Length: 152
Image (cartoon, rainbow, N blue to C red; front, top):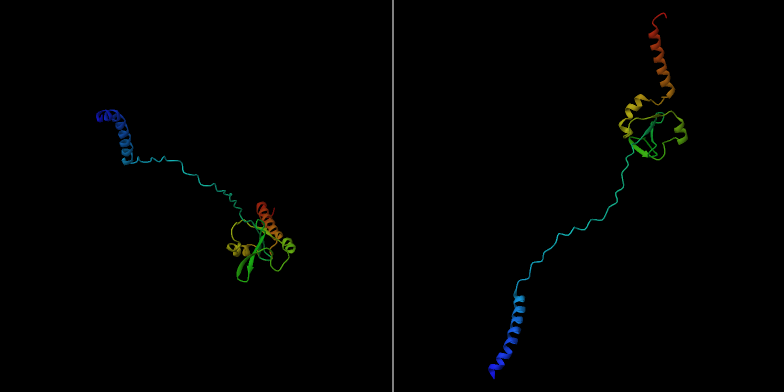
């Protein structure tokens, strides 16, 4: 009877034992390494960059007042005591009077104080455009006289 009981339960016991052993062996087994896939990194947020426009200063010089005006900046540059200043209005004169006075467009595009000594020599306070024309006309007449020769 015991033999019959063992024979009848043996196959069931073997299957249960195998299943138990397999599940326990799986717990004891080392876990597989996790493989990380190189996923593309998150893109940084787009940054809006505004283009920079560089506009060169353009100065008009008013020799009678020793004042420079930048039409790009709408600013006046002049000496105030021993320091150079930049202001929105000219010194000691109205804008209308200043703009009506003789002026010359400058060909430099940096700070006027770098060129002021040369400007004062080239264009003294009494300078006027007519003076330049008369001087040039006088030089032209001298050349014509030279071309014609003496006595002609």
